[in-house]
Image (cartoon, rainbow, N blue to C red; front, side, top):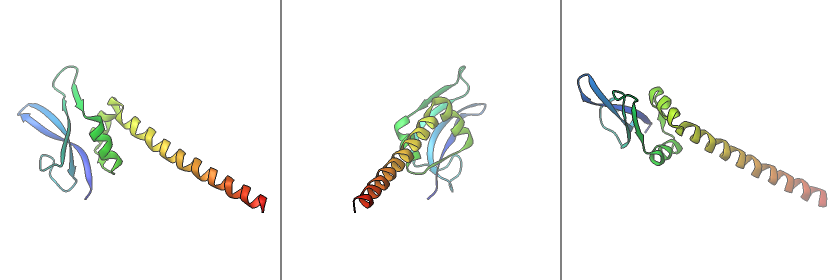
Length: 112
C-alpha cells in the first residue's frame, strides 16, 4: 500500500479549507483516508496552518510520500528539514559504525 500525505478539500463553495491526511494513493482526493494530520486554511490572512509534527514524522519515517503542495507547506513549518536531518544523522551514524568496524578489523590483522 503506497501511502501519500495530501490535502483533503473541505468547506463550502468558494470558502475552502484543507485537512492534511495520510491516505492510500489509490483513493480519491476527498475520499477515504487513514489518519488526519492537521489542517490548512488559506482564506485567513496570514494563512492558518496546524500540523501534528509527531504524526507527520512517523508517517514519513514509515515511507509515506508527500504531494508537492504538502511538501512546500511542511517545508515552511520546518518539518521537511527536520526529517532530512534525521536521515543524515542515520546515514552518518551507520557510516561511523562501519569505520569503527573496519578499524577494529585492521587492528586485529596487524596483531596477528
